[in-house]
Length: 474
Ligand code: ATP
Image 1 (cartoon, helix red, strand yellow):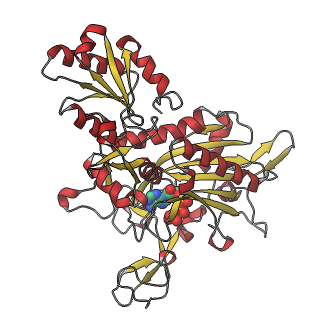
Image 2: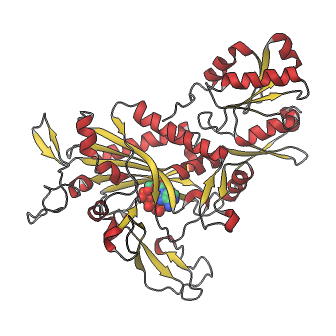
Image 3: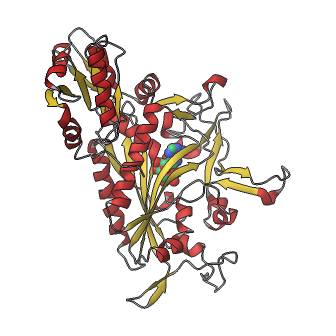
């Protein structure tokens, strides 16, 4: 069946809520509830065959954009478990707290800053205990030690940033970098969230893409925050996220983290159905010189005392031109992989319903992010020549882009299946192909079909993926 027939007069509907994405994600192999065979584990999710590709494509797009395509950023991959002293001096042991409150009526426990209109989200009462701090770093023990041995305590990192700060000098000296320059890292972080939820938006284990951009103390820090906000707005646009679904939140001074002098959060409309639809997608913070200073052995406090008697290094920088030594300031864009993936899925989702009330889902993923770039579909699966040709085409495309072969349904069903997972191109091999060595390339978004010679196919597809070239691996 041709699509324009199916959609005589289509009605377009974007994703109405996160639940729609949860159901698509499970149905089509993007994301599954974790540990389901044992009844699940609250707010933990496993990425399936398409989800892992989508996550990898987001991370690779980010890495390419910052590390490969710019001249001023290097990458690192530090340990998840660091010396505990890192978290002492970063301030996380003392201050990485959520404020807990309990509802006296139903005993529900919540994050104080997430309560709307002073009402308990479970029972609606407004009778609360006093707020008290709860440190959200996840603990573990290193080595074969007694369960209560305090010296074995270690943390799973709650942010990737500290692994960058403690490697600042290593990177700067080995790569012979001069300010300004940045260091990027992507990887898992862990937070013992009080109230995780909303699918992959808030989980205890998640992935971050963080970059620390080191600049002189005299740089125009606030302007640099604006610069990185603009850069990220553009980048999210290149991933297919509509600017109208993003909102900039200037974090008020009383809400700033202990290290920050200014933070702008980029919020995404994760809850279009709610009166307050926004939740944080990422933050861009001016972290001052706090982190490099606090990990340095020579930094003194106001009374002239060393603030860090445990450090063996000084993470200061000597400016050859100004002939000055100082602790660089940092502008940090910190984004979540999972929240980016959720925003991308919500923005790509579209439902079309025809006059008869039949609905189809089309995932308009940007081609660079699509888990599969091309699906090769034989028009007659009982014809060995056609099947053989389709499989050979799939194999020939494999080294260039991610392609799949599928013959498990009629052509209408196969098209619909690929549309629902966002595959930009379907390639059909028919009887005519055996004669003219050409195939039909169908575009997911326009449903236009073009006849292309098999010998030109790889180049043709690559050209059409061009603004978003197929990512090389990290
Ligand atoms: P929130 O206020 O939503 O808890 P945050 O301000 O504590 O977030 P940051 O410390 O700025 O978050 O972390 C940077 C980014 O890491 C966030 O913008 C988000 O994309 C991601 N992130 C943080 N916590 C989580 C989580 N529990 N689950 C998924 N992603 C997270």
